Length: 458
Image (tube, rainbow, N blue to C red; front, top):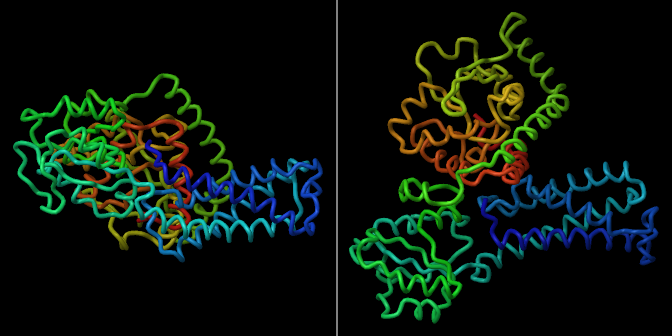
């Protein structure tokens, strides 16, 4: 999982603002008197740090630290208000159990107002500044042919937020695709040119490395602190996916990632069990309501659960469990992709799909070890057989357990075609390569945004 410097800096700034909001709120409430009088312990720092922690977690949960965030200004402000309210609520809950650091309702209300205003202001400033070159790495692309064209295809502002391409240099044998104004003639000394133009990274995007590979100059750059990256590695970091169009088997074999230690697997399994049990208890009222609603709509004899064969870890088959959201005879014969506004979805099914309540029975799949909380979504055997024949590396997504939620679900809308499957595979491979417990927790927190804003539901 690659963390971008501007996002880390923004999180630190916003955490500091929430600490400031706590101190300012108490000062205003007590008319400038010592802020220590606000808590029973006489210390305000633990109170402020707790509020800041919940604030940053809540901002993360509503997607405001995601590089793929493309909300309007009004949408961002709405998310800030929601995150601010969540931080106040979570803080108040902890203050109840830790009365020594608790503050009164009046101070909490002021903290909420000041927090929302300061966060909104900081976010507006950040959105303006980050588009300048202040935080962007200066990148030289060595190559201007077919492989380098993948950089020219980047259109999303979020994909180009972290870097600025200084120039393309055509390598020997390239069929040039870059525009003439973006090309630079091959300098006699590549290292000196990079230093003079304040290059931070060199991306190697040659079409044929066997012809004129400047090993000595790349080595000079690397030893001088200028990073030299392969094109797939650079695109992986900037886009959050493994680009299949520039991928080679050697990059997977000799590169980093694509591994998990026994300790990591044990920690992930322990987390899956504890979290599943906790969520089963916490969501029991919602599941009972779903059962009742399905019975009312379709009759007492209609099945509540839906079992469907899926492909799991190492290609093994298992039955995934869901609350039934389609008509009883939704599929007769050939397996079909779900589509937008699918007429087979019932009225209750439409609600439980949008709120993800239909996925809750999969907690039992997690407890049985067939699934994990986080991982690629399990597909049907009929689709997998077809996709493995048409999409390279599709089999590799089954090297980890499938999940209830995953990186692809956060980054890409619901897929209903082979083209969508290819796009989602690139995100799934990114997860498989970079998986860790911290990455899993980050995905789970961001899943809150998916549930609250109904992204990808179908």
